Image (tube, rainbow, N blue to C red; front, side, top):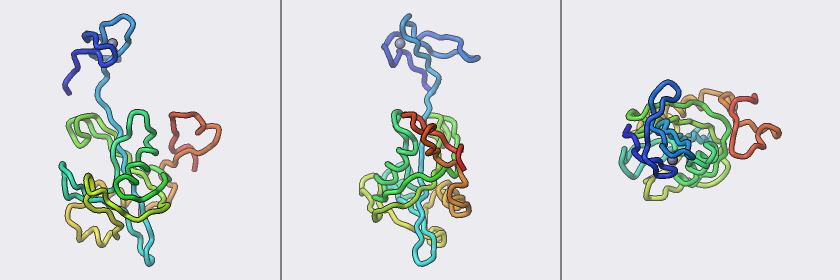
Length: 202
Ligand SMILES: [Zn+2]
């Protein structure tokens, strides 16, 4: 991780403070309390299933761009810093596949330190189960080359299906809807804007 030299909030030179058991870059300006704790990000991806002729199919998209151009994965991306992750995953699914789907529960997540699978930042990647609502698969042709619903048998014959996506789909198909960490929709808890609880309701 490369450390910043200047404060991203007020552009003053950074100095070092001892905070939380280690030395960290911190702003030298009296009225600015910025401390650099590291680079973190939140990724999200959605498993959307549909039953066709008695068989369950899951939504996959094929990457059009590097890294991993040509690979198939469940649709997803990064949550913006001012966006709830459940909103982000619904947005990414729609942008990448044309499918409208709504979050049910979290089926798994991955924690990867910077420099590993998380990329340049330390990353939490959450895999959601989503309920299909409407739409037909449509790729944007820029980031995504193709989008479609496939059975597990079909995926076995496809090249470049990402391992984590396949595990997420298997976990979703092998568990009942709502047995993961469900989004809390209890009125007096969920009415606070800008935050969201998972797993407090059964
Ligand atoms: Zn500052």
